[in-house]
Amino acid sequence: MTTTPQPIKIAILAMGGEGGGVLADWIVDLGEHNGYIAQTTSVPGVAQRTGATIYYVELFPAEQARRDGGRPVLALMPLPGDVDVVLASELMEAGRAVQRGLVTPERTTLIASTHRVYAIAEKTAMGDGRVDDAELLAHAARAAKRFVRFDMAAAAEATLAWPTRAVVWAIWRCRLVRSTSSSSTSVMRPTPAAARYSATGEPRPPAPITSACAAARRSWPSMPNSSSRMWRE
Image (tube, rainbow, N blue to C red; front, side, top):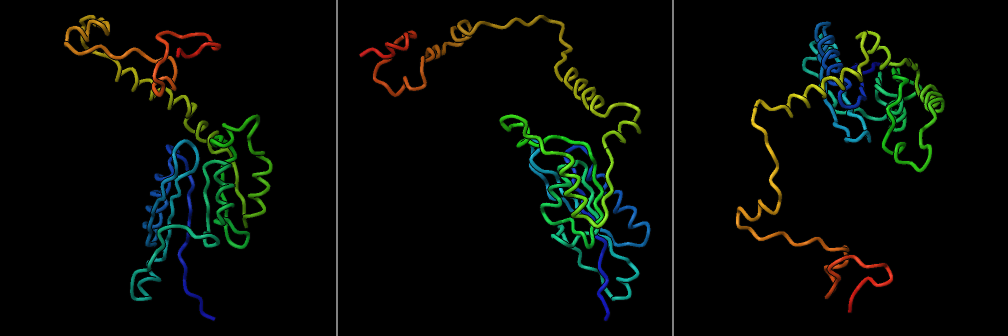
């Protein structure tokens, strides 16, 4: 039985700033320099740590495409049960890849980091909402044909010889200092609100009410009262 040649299908799950797009571009460049037709797409994730961006790469042999007399039609996003390699930059994202069906025991090699960046649901839980790392690792090992795991964050820090989190902090601190510094030598003193309104001739703003429900009442006190006598009739 003759089987139709299939492309190599790679899904990369990475959070913002972790270099998932750079890695996808490297794989595309590597494939094109080794006789493959390569395509990469991305599906953006949700902010505030509720989902990673999925970068999807397909590689098809250029020689096989020439023999077939045309260019292959490559997919734009991964399908459950149809991925050869899944790379996850964080352990929870590896678990999400398994949950989506991208990792299968008959086919998929799963490469994942063992470090954790806690999800929003874990942080907002009443009490300890963290997912058990050992359970995630066991679930991923059962789901994949081959499971390769190591601490990618620690490897990056060891390679750079400087903590990556400290680097990010230093960069943003430098940006903050530069954006808030001024070349002016004159001293600026804030003008009181009352003087500003008087100078411009604008009416004074209304005095703040004492309760959110006060505006719906016909009368309310001009100053706070005790809880026993809240409103004046």
